[in-house]
Image 1 (tube, rainbow, N blue to C red):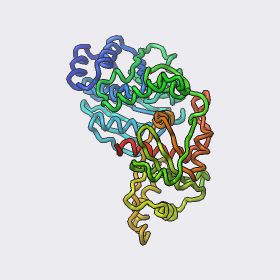
Image 2: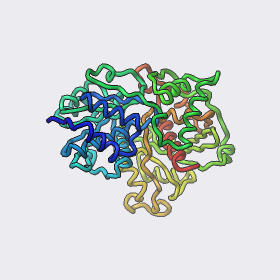
Image 3: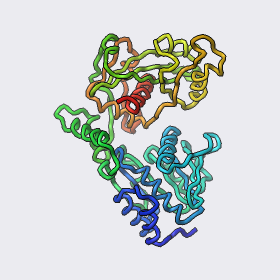
Image 4: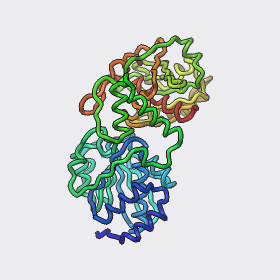
Length: 408
């Protein structure tokens, strides 16, 4: 299949069809099409608009050529869900399908978009597409990516934060674009302030290793690797002090299951100024009954209207449904109203942790012993893999993301 449109038509489409495409990306993509590059690498810091720009460019290509199949993939399912969300917001097109049968969408030019995650090489075997788009590419093992490439007929696009100098750097016939938040002209004043805070923290004499890591990777868009303990200098407060913090409280829920013996955790979070407060409400193994969990949640002072963000991965979707619907109306009394449990907004582990660590102080409420213990022992190894229990940490991250997105 010979997919070489004239440069003039591509330029027209990029300008007219994807008017939000930043100039840095537009010029780079045009050069890549002109030189017929096989591998297109997009390396950038946080909020540099890598994913949206790639989607916009591929949309323009699909409009021009017609009848293309574009495979958008990630290594892990939560990352795929975020990628689908970006696609829907960017294109205004709803993605259909399911985890079992695959996700898909169609855009102008009868372009078929397929969305899937590939966590094994065998799962990637037999895939076919005209264009391959690997989001968060450094998370994907090289063997899986090479298997996907065998079925890619034209170009492959790779987006990633420079958290580790991985296999993408060794691809032949490739072009690389390095970007930062400064290449994204659509950031809000609050988002720009967030980056200036990262820079300010990193340049302090007392800057931690994590502060410097964030500055290099997310601000400058340069390669760096974080190794070692994540949370330092945790502070404490009393229950009374926590209750008096003048901020709305968000709640995160991480399910435990009988099959893995992990605890069920419920954690509250408050943001006040540049201080971040956490309080552990539930940390219990064997709490696998949804009715009993609902009773415990209500006993901790929450009610049917309190928003709670929960992990929907694995069997979490079914448990969220039970909590929302009072087990399809079988519960009685206060439980009959169900609970306001929502799918959490998930991010990559390092990205999620970096959001927490932009705060000057992380303050743990008394009685949150397991949460404090998890934070004190949580670390990242040289391969970028986290070590340590993280059940309450995850619940805290879900609560924090809700608070940040919904509370001023």
